[in-house]
Amino acid sequence: MRMLRQLSLTPLWLIEVFSWAKSFQANPVIGSKLLNTLGLHVARVIVAHGLFVFRQRLLWRLADSKDRRAFASQGYLLKHDFLPQSQFLALKREAETYQGALRDEVEGDTLAQRVYLTRQALLGLPQCTALTEHRGLLRLLRYCSSKNRIPFFFLENLQQGHLKRGSRDSQKDLHCDTFHPCIKAWLYLDPAELHNGPFEFIPGSHRLTWGRVRWEYRQSLEASLRGKLRDPARYWDGSFRVGDADLAEMGLTQPIAMSVPANTLLIANVRGFHRRGEATGQSPRLSVWMQSRDNPFNPLFTPFPKLTARVFEWVWIRHLAREFPRKEAEGLWKGRTGQFVRHPNVP
Image (tube, rainbow, N blue to C red; front, side, top):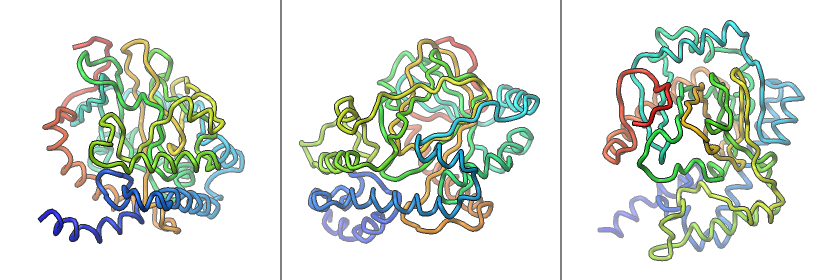
């Protein structure tokens, strides 16, 4: 029966090779020791990177030359005082006083509270709606994604050390999100400072250098191990962790902490090495969080970003609905109605 099941799933596993699928454990083709010895993972990395650059060059009109150069060289963009002060303060008030459906997510000892800003959720949130329609923001995000994509928008409230129990927050380990370039962005409604754990990033670590290619190859071989050879503490989902020795070999520096004031926009290519910084206290960090991930092997970008955003929203809502029962059973997610936790007390 197991063999028949594997045979029936093989076409799907083969198709996933040409998608954003990244798990070496869930997909035996992506996780094949033979195929990765022959260079499957490295080939996916190189092709995805080349197509990303190709699409961005076609979208060059969406961003000015200064932003294009900074994003290409550093892997991130910072925009201070992004919104006019009156608009920013109104947005922050709206987020702080939000009352409605939200999801509590446990990430180690970190409590992440998120509201997915769907078209339905945006009803009654005029300031959030205005941000999701902000022309300058959308143009930057559409360019940086290379897919002309309008991203998912979330209200996100993070509080490290909020939970006494729990394992280490895996987001605090230096890592890349996946094998292909993609973006995450934050408009900080609170200052991101050392006490509340700012985002950390290694400038230039998104570049596809020869050192990075060699490192990816070694990682793919280790991630293809099976059975008892698999280290249970290792991340087999394709989100590779990196150590100091690896960074030195690739000629990379240590990450810098993005300690920035409120009303700063940060857009990062999370193909680069990054992590959630360690907090010294339990202060919350409220932001509008944005993310965009798409099939890296499609050489084209969407000509209809608004229509595509609606389709992706429809798909993502159903994906979250399928995931929720499992995550809830594991004690990782909890849905509730209320407000964000905005105080440092530990329950």
